[in-house]
Structure formats: C-alpha cells, structure tokens
Amino acid sequence: MVLFKNCQKCPVASLIERNSVYEIKISEELDESIWFKISGFNKNKEHFFSPQFISAMKSNSSVKLFFVEMLEKKRTMGVAIIGVTNFYGQPLERFLPQRGPLIEIVGRYLKLLNRNLEFKLLVLGNPLSSGETGLVLADDCNKTKAIRSIIKAAGIIENKSDNIQGWVLKDFLEDSDFSRILADECSLTRCITDPDMVLRVEPHWQDFNDYLENLQSKYRVKARRAYSKSNNLRMESLSSEDLKKYSSEMESLYNQVLNHCDYYMGRLNGEMFEKLKSGLGSSFIADGYFLGDKLVGFKTAHLASGNMKALWVGFDYDFNQEHGIYSRILYDYVKLGIELKAQTIDFGRTATEMKSCLGARPKQMVCFIKQSKFFMNLMMKFLASKIIFPVQIIRDPFKKELFTREMAG
Image (cartoon, rainbow, N blue to C red; front, side):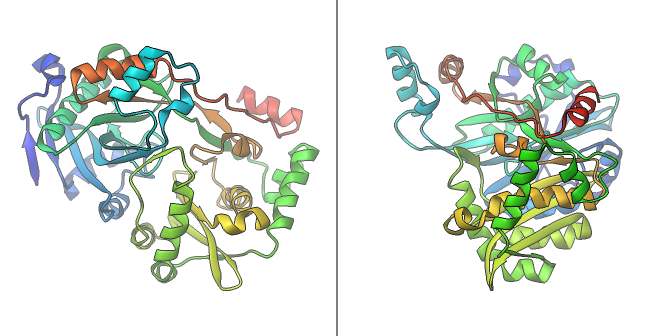
C-alpha cells in the first residue's frame, strides 16, 4: 500500500530542485513485483534486502519500517529502508574530555549531558545491525539524485510521524561516494562510528587448524586458551523449534549485551530468531551455548554470496568471566566461516581490539545525523565537532608472510 506519493516537501527537501530527485513512493510493504525488480540490485546486500529478512524485521515492534521506492519514467531505480525507532545511549560527557562553558551550555540545551539518552529517531538502514543496509540501487542510478530523494522521503515520513527528534543515516564506508555526497551536498553532521571488523578467509584454510597455524605463537596460545577455558560449554545448533522454545531466554541474554553498550537503537524480540530461521533456512545459523541444561549464550549468522555476516549474540555476564563465553563465540565464528567456505566474515562493530586479535581488519564507517529543528541542528553540528572517541587498538595476529599478503590484497 502506497502511503504517500510526492507529498509536500519538508524544510530540507524544499531546498532541493524538483528535477534533482526521483519520483518517490513511500509504503509500509513491498509487493512481490518490487522484490523481483530489485533482485538484480542486491549485490552484497542479500543479508538484509530479502523478503524473508524484512518480514522478520517487521515482526519487531521496536522498529517501524517504511520503504522508499525511487522511480524514473515508471522504472524502479532503487529502494531505501527507513525505520523509526528509539535511540538509547550513555551520557555524552565521557566523549567530551575538554568541556568549556559553551559546550556545557549547548550540551545541556540539547539534553545530552548528565543523563542517559533516549530519543525517537528516523533511521536510514537497519537499526538493529551495522553496515550499509539502507538502500539498493540500479547500476545506472544517479547516487546524488538517490540520496536527495531519500532526504526528501525522510522529511515526509518525519512530518507524518509523531515526536521524531532527529535523523540518522547509517552506516557508510568513510571513503564511499555516499559519504561524500551526504557530507558535501546535504549539510548533515558527519560522525565517525566504530569500524566494522572483517576477516578475510584465506583459500588455503581448509579447517580451523590451518587458521591457527597462520597465527603468531601468542595469538595461537590465546585461541587455544579460549577453548580450554570454555571446555564446560556445550554448543548446539538451534532449529526453528529450538528457537521458539528458547526465545525468551535468548531475548534476555541479548538484552544483557545491549545493556553493556554505550549506545544502541531498537531492541530485538526473541520471536524474530525463529522467523529468520523459518524464512531463510540453512543460510541463517543459530547456535546455543549451554552449561548443563542452562542456555548461557548464543550466536547467529547469515551466509549470502559467499560472505558470512555475524549478526546477534547474547551471553550471561554472570558466567562469562569464568567460562569465557564471548571469546568462545568469536573463535567459533571463525571456525564456522571456514566450514562454510565463506570468503569473508563480517563481525560488525564493538570489541574492536578483541576482534582484531582474530585477524579481522577495520572498515571505517561514518553516519550522518540531523536534529529536527534548525537551530538545534546547528548546535548539534558544533557539539559533534568537539567529540573525541577513544583510540581503537588494532592487533596484527598473523605471521608476517600472511599479513604482508593480506595487505597487498
């Protein structure tokens, strides 16, 4: 059902000339004909742009999804996903080590200091996962025109929604065309995020032992210690029936991880895992980690076009220190990627140093934000320029000959 078609422009969109945007249709569903049209656009986007994945996402009440179809002379040029959800975060002062009076005034006015953050946001992309998941475009689609069309659509959705306090357009590679267009042409506030950590799976890794042999001695010892420490954990593959059975426990374990994050958008519900398994079949992998009969951790992943995406994990912090659940999960992701003959393993962001110890390399991502009110948006731009994020430590775990070959590739 089409909700809006070329509705009135928002303040940002009013600055855009009519012939510089595509015709847009905004709806809450994408019918089968649209999925068929964009099936050829999905290069490296199959993790999120599929009817099965979107159907599971729509079952999550914490995110309301809209679909923006861009057309030129009735031909579909691209589709973007825009979600409306809540943002939660820690007080911002930890990232503002040098706060003068002006920063204090601006930060307090924007309600970003000395309080936990909670805002209702409009988000381009999947609020529940990292990566470039917000849009798919035809090969001959004009990227500048597409971005302007999405900006226009976002303004329309904001005007039709209640209490939207800002926008987030995420996640884009730092040096991508999209980042340049958003920074140069749309005057949004550019923010550096944690990098996506990606491990390239070497063709000669036939099993996990081959991977271990390419690690420097201390990192090989570290990996073996992780398995020794987690020896009492039992890993089991979870079927659709298992995911239904353990849905509440998985949701609780996932929430424990969220509650230790500096910030996040939306929350998963446990029912989503079973829907993903039912819809995606063997390409969606879910494993549980048990101590006796108690589920104390889980991991999920999706394999598409030879690339494995590590999705959501959860674990019990009361047992993690003694049994090393999270470390075991990370090494099991490597083992799984090798077994599935994936070309890459995308670990997502967070725990950057820990993931680099596995051999994952950073892909720096950026997002773009906008406050809904013009004056507040100017203040946000000023405040964002003063934020200093911790320096990310990147380890080089591979033996020199492999690391040199990796950098050359």
